[in-house]
Image 1 (cartoon, rainbow, N blue to C red):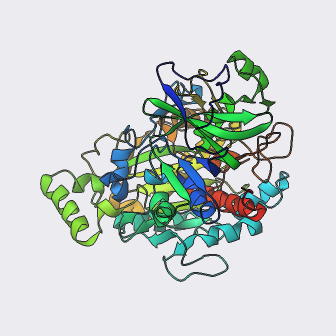
Image 2: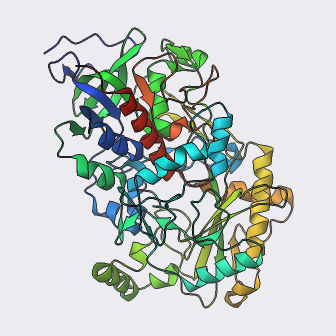
Image 3: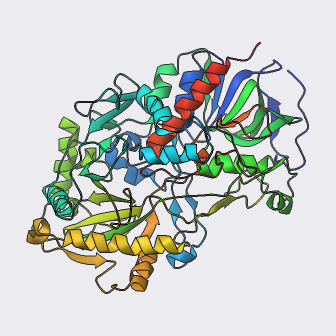
Amino acid sequence: MRAIATPPRNASVPTALALVAVGGKMADWDYIIVGAGTAGSLLANRLSTKARVLLLEAGGRDNYLWIHVPIGYLYCIDNPRTDWRFRTRAEPGLEGRSLLYPRGKVLGGCSSINGMLYLRGQAADYDHWRQMGNSGWGWDDVLPYFRKHEDYAAGPADPEIHGTGGEWRVENQRLHWEVLDDWARAAQTCGIRASEDFNTGDNEGVGYFKVNQRSGWRWNAARAFLAPARRRETLKIETQAHAQGLIFEGARCVGVRYRRGDTVHEVRAQGEVILCSGAIGSAQLLQLAGIGPGSFMQSMGIDVRRDCDTGENLQDHLQLRLAYKVAGAKTLNTMTQSLWGKGRIALEYALRRTGPMSMAPSQLGAFARSGPDVERADLEYHVQPLSLDAFGQDLHAFPAITASVCQLRPQSRGHVRLTSPDPMAAPEIAPNYLSAEADRHIAARAIRLTRKIMQAEPLARYQPEEFRPGPQAQTEEELARAAGQIGTTIFHPVGTARMGTDPGAVVGPDLRVHGIAGLRVADASIMPAITSGNTNSPTLMIAEKAADMILRAGAPAR
């Protein structure tokens, strides 16, 4: 076994832990991937067809039943078995509230705990990336990578838009709700057209979301991409492996130091180390390696390896959860108020994989413009036949629906920063929601549009009564304040290792870290601007394109 290099002075390696090398070769692997979430699972599948791959995951296996039952997200979020359980710092724009910030800590990552919605965003999002200097990332460039892994079983598919036979299953939802059908009709009376497919490049419209499910089960990235690859001799999946830092030889990243149990291991890559730990984890690892804002690195006592904007540019979708009491409507609130009702729901799922246990957190969706002066949809609705005060709490005892709305392209920017050189310490997460005046203005518009829809004739028979935030908020200032009171994350952090060609950018269009050989980032952190929709499927696209670039370059010589 090779000698162990002395850890850099900034590395936190508990003296009580043993430090060992894994393997006996100069380079144990061709590629080391850090993070077995959405991106890492796909990348490991693709690269292991041609090369030796080590996949490191800080969490455990995805063998928890509630991961796979769609409604089980309620039991996975804020669960130490499946979630990092991060929290934001107190947010001034949210009246000083600190939010739970779910991030998957399990094989499949966030695809194991998210809302299962299949949404690509808008063509203009990716064309904007290209206009920002990121050649090869326009809509026409990335569409083939969406199609490559897609198994679109949700109805007739345009082969120019959708793919079939891939690993990533896309299905129609398995239940409809009359009150949501009426909400869709109400939206149409307000000028929002009906839509059967939000994934053509123009997502404006109202309709039921497509979901990543197979026959009523969640279809996460681990089942889609890791399960078919597990038996390959070229792939090793190491769970409970918490990355502690990166190993360098000069300006080249050559390996990873990770902790498993009471032992810290060192592993080396002949080719590349690829970070797939998401907007929080990848930013943290880069900063621990001295790749980040120079003055901040120095304040942490970390030697600056490259001065750049790592951890800055954090973007997220803030959802405003407007809730309405309704009369005479079948909702999940009322269905779950008795043991008999809960039993019927469980039995239906056990026998047919249908009913409320098969549903995604959001069923009906809409993409709309906040005003006539907006060129393309800048609002996204998630409409649910239920209401509750917060995730993990009981549903309300009265019939109600929730119309959550988020601004798709916020101007507010936040950050992710180390709180300590200790890799086990949680970083500071500061989204800075509603810090931009434009975002507060759009939030007020969003509440007004939601009220207009709820007051439309197709919903009149339900006598909707707004109780969150409540009708007392009317002026622009009052509505902006109400947004801060009810706003919460929709779990779409991106941008903290942004792609670009300017001096502050972290990675280039090839996803290589600027100024560092042997190191790439391939996850949502590379997005220079957030996509106009949920971010899971764009993250898969990023990983698919990264795999193609890496394989085209060829496996490293041995």
